[in-house]
Image 1: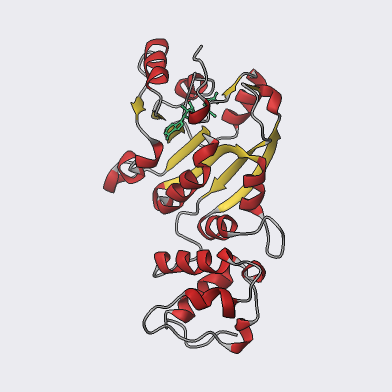
Image 2 (image 1 turned 120 degrees about the vertical axis):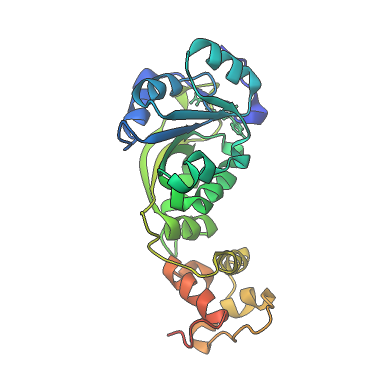
Length: 263
Ligand code: SAM
């Protein structure tokens, strides 16, 4: 057993029923490629390695890498920071087979991991991941609710998020201070919404939500790009939290001059 390191978000799963339920949630076929983020002491890893011949685990803690290499013969485990992973390369480059990602995430970098998966959307089929309950709520939140924000919009534009089930604090060692939930993200083969300039779209979403209570007239006045179209009056009085994810795509297209009018 490894001594848990708090700074690495180490809360190890202890309950066999929860472990089985999480692994059973994965929709991968036996020939698919499965990648686990943060195997730790291997609670999920043993089952995953048994079920999927094409399996890779990514772990930043060298102690865990050494332990699992010793305990699970033939395991493909890479000593890496998940935020430095090249998902396209892992999926096999040009011959890409879309990945099934699974993990009880280190909570201190949940958002960064989510954004890195969204950026890799073309090579990801699915992600079955554990996170703080409140973050899971944000992923599935609808407009005009407290949880609705940048993560809701960015995630819902790239995939279909589903809050599968809550997970009790009692199934971890040590017990985390926060509640947890399992989430499934299903990525469509072709993006449902295509934005010609994803970086600008993300900038518009971020700028609007940075002052979520203000009208777009005010919150977006900080966006000063050359050739930007003026906001139409009908939209100037709306607030970020009222716009659907699709509204943001249209808004960004309009501001960038790709759409002649917004109604
Ligand atoms: N999967 C194990 C379980 O369910 O018991 C451990 C989960 S624990 C919540 C998170 C794991 O992510 C830890 O093993 C931790 O060392 C690892 N981790 C933390 N930061 C990481 C990073 N940047 N890249 C890869 N793994 C990381």
